[in-house]
Length: 346
Image 1 (spheres, rainbow, N blue to C red):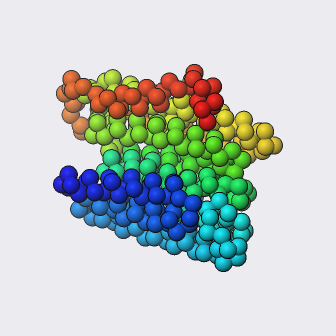
Image 2: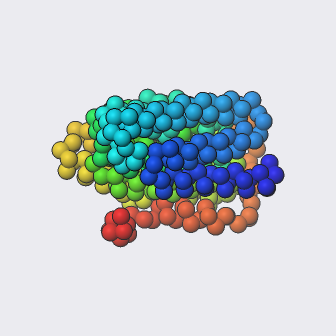
Image 3: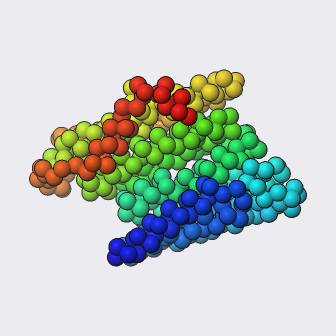
């Protein structure tokens, strides 16, 4: 893909996201979401591989259906209340339709089936965009309408996402699919808290973006798409493999790493809301995802594979590590001690 085309698509993505997150009117927010969808499609299908074309088609169909539902919910609300303002979504039916539409856009269970397939058909850099930047506008819409959303529906979806994200990721061997299921279970944690503490859901999203970006860029730098390739990467980039181990454990939410902070705060907030059983269930379900993170971490730092692999050992490279990987990895490991400062900013 030539640089001019890349620049146009990147600018469109930025513009679409900016329009959605800064708008007060439903039609404007919908326009931003559409620009985003159309800008990411060429980036998904740029390799012209049948799997990439299939991924782009699936993505387009799901996003088009979700956008139609967003429009439908806002029109229903305007019909009943005369309001097009995003924060004035008060009609119960409109709230339910909007929650379903945003769940489809994000890939929340039970509308999650498209996400692993689309991620598997995309390059790692596009996969990073799909997992982070493309989820920002829908999360913002949830944030703005959080006062009027149905808590019971979101809690059910959240627990379902945490369960399915952990359970379906257990037997995966492709790194992109594992990161897709990881994203689904993280979205569960965001959805469960959005009606009680929207700022906490946003903090969770920011930290998730940091850690996922570090993981995706590290895997992209090491050219790893499968677990079998990951097993032999230690000989090529030993330091990067060790850092990937810590990033993955941070994604799993183990103390004393950054990923523990949002989980800890969410459990605390749920307990304050007298939802201790729900907090217990979602914490236990996160153990499922911990298993596949540990599996990835084990594969990334293993020095002798448990069985004979067909891969040649890679030559050790002295190529300097990208500065963005270094910064993101540091942030996704070491932010827990400064959590009081983060909370005062939020």
